[in-house]
Every structure is written in structure tokens, then in C-alpha cells.
Image 1 (tube, rainbow, N blue to C red):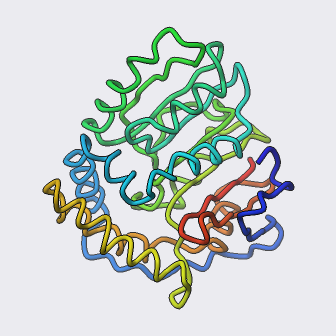
Image 2 (image 1 turned 180 degrees about the vertical axis):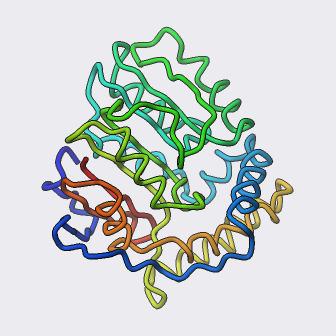
Length: 270
């Protein structure tokens, strides 16, 4: 995981260079709501499920999301004393891993646009005070309009968030803007697998037979009904690579499939 050229044996990847891209070929997406209303709807969903977010993540991934998040942080190559941003931070799992990576002399920002879920992140982070990890600064903000200066971070992560952003290319361009030259972005999310693949069948089964029942038991069935459509509208690996390149990532850009194609991680170098 220490280098883009050194691939873990359990993942596959696609690769694209800046020179190979003429224009992005976007996947068709149904827009039942205006961009403004859709963004507000997603914000409401995450505010509503804030206290149960971790439980549902554990149910969906059988707890494996923690190892995937560690892999994403390792792919950024965040080092002691550096500045790191975790966009769409949720309850702050990845921000905490970044805080350990950069150490007490570093600085980490966890950004999310849902205030209730940020409150959960703050509460969870409180017991870590006084450790050798960096203290995380929690910021409510929009991934499509980051409130930070150009080239102000050495690493950026986004876990299970880009899929929910209204304008994904705009968010990728913002990630590129705030990264220093040579720094890396890691975007972890569900993999949009090929329709006839085993990964697609397994993913659909898990959503219908594990996630929805758990969400129903917690009173959030309607909130989690959006998951499968959001995965189906999410670009596949090769398209995410092209989007990263056209959004300003001029270094090596690769997409890795994880967990037999159930998850994926876009790793892009500024």
C-alpha cells in the first residue's frame, strides 16, 4: 500500500494517464429532484441517521470497512507533521486514522455538511484527547466549495461520500485545488460493479437482506432506500479515473477494486 506502483495482491486496478483523456464519458443518471433539493435531501438523511451510522456500516460490511479505511489512508502516504483533510467525514473514522498518521505535530480537518453527524464525530473524538495523534478540527462545509486555501493539504480522503455529492467532478476539482503538488487523494466507496458480475449480485443481496432489515429495525428503512440507486448512478472505476484527470489530477491515477469488487478506491496524485 505504500506506493501506487506496488499493488496489494487482493485488489485489481484500472489505470489512466492525463494524456489518454480527451473528454469524460459520463454515465447516465436520473435526476428526479433539482440539484438543490437533492443535496438538501441527502443532508437530511445523514442528519437523521447520525446516531446509527456506525451500526449500519458494520452491518453492511461485517466490520470490514475499518480495514478498507486504513488502506485508503495508507494510499495517501500521509506522514508525521503533515496537514490532511477528510471530506464527507461522517462520524470521523477516517479522520481519526489520519490523525494517527500525521501525529500530534500534524493537523487534520474533518469536513461534513450534516451538522448532526459532525456532532457524533466530535463526541467520539473527545476520548482521544491527549494522545499522540493530532487533534481533529471539525468543520461543517460543502465538498463542492471547500473553505480552504489552494495547495493547503498534504493528503485528502473521502470515504463513502463522493457518491452522494450532487456534482462529483466539481468535488474532485476542489480536492485537487486544495492538495499540494505530488500529494494524493483516496476516495473509498461502493464499487459500481458490472451488471452481470458476482460482485453486483452479492452487493444487491447484502443491501436487500442485511442493510435494509437492520435499517428497518432502527426505524430508518426509508432513509436507506436511496443506497442501491445511488450505487447504480455512481461511475465505474475507469470513469472515475477519467473524471479525476479532467478535474486536475496530473500524476498517477488508479482505481482499485476491493473485497472481490464490492468496494473500490480511487487513488489520484496531484
